[in-house]
Length: 355
Image (cartoon, rainbow, N blue to C red; front, side, top):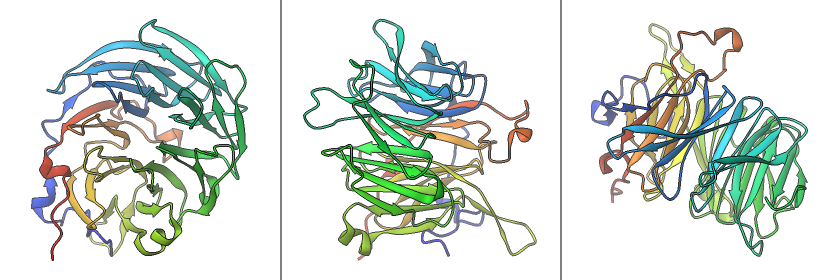
C-alpha cells in the first residue's frame, strides 16, 4: 500500500485539483520536450526539445507567454539550466556537446564535449573556484566539470555506468546512472565520489532532484515509485522511505498499470515536492508528513518535465511523448505543449501535523 494512499480515481475528491484553466505556452517546440527550467532571477523559462533547439520565453503572472530567444544544437537537446545570475542558459544533448547562450549578446558558444550524448547539465558552485562552474554527466560514463574560460575540463570523474540524471544544491551533487547506481558528490571535493550507493527503488532510475538545503534528494524510477534519501547515513537509516505513485487501477482486474515517474520538482519555499509521469498526471506531496496535498487528472499525454518558478507561484509542466514505448508510438497525434498552473498555498503548503 502506498504511504500516501492511492493516486487512482477513487481518491477522495478534496485532494483532486483542477487543471482546466492552466495556460498553454505560445509557440511551443515542434518535437518532444525533454527539459524545462525557470530562471532563478525572473520569470523566464528555458525549454529544451528533441527538435534540437532551446527556446527562451518570458512568462507573465497570468500565465501568458512570449518567445524571447532561441538557439540550436546539432542533435536533440536533453537538458537546459540557467546560470545563478539569470544571464545565461547552458544546454546539452545528443550532439555530445554543451552550449552556453548569453542573453545579452544573443550568442551561443560550445563549452563542453563528451564521447557520447550528455544527459544532464548543471551549474555548480565549487568553493574556491571564483565563479560558477558547469557540470556535465554523459552516457560515456563520465562526469566533467568545466570552467567556461578554458577549453579542457578542469576535472573528469569516471562513473560506474551511463548517466541518466543529475541534480545539485549547495555542496551536494547527485548522479543517477544505469544499473541503479547513485553517486553522491561533496562539491568541496568535486573530483572524488563521496559516496556510492544503490537506488532504494527496484527498477531503472529516471530522475533525481536535490532538496535546497543540500541534505537530501528525491529519486524516481520507471516503476512509478519515488524515494526520499538523506546524505547523512544516520538520518537516512531512520527517515528515508519510498512510496508508490503514477499507477492506475485496471477496470475489472485486480492489477495496476504502472507508469514511469519522469520528473520531480521541489517547491523553493515549502520543500514540498511534485511528481509527474507517463500517465499524464502530476501530484503535490508533503513528504515530511507523508501526505498527498493535491493530485490532478490526466492532462492528455505524458508529462516529461516540470519546474517551479523562483518563488513557487507558478508550476510549469511539459506534455509530450516520453519515448517509453519506443519510437513506433511517437505519432503526430500526440500533443506537444507546456502549460502553467498557478499554485495557491492549498496545493503546495505543508499541512499541520496531527498531534
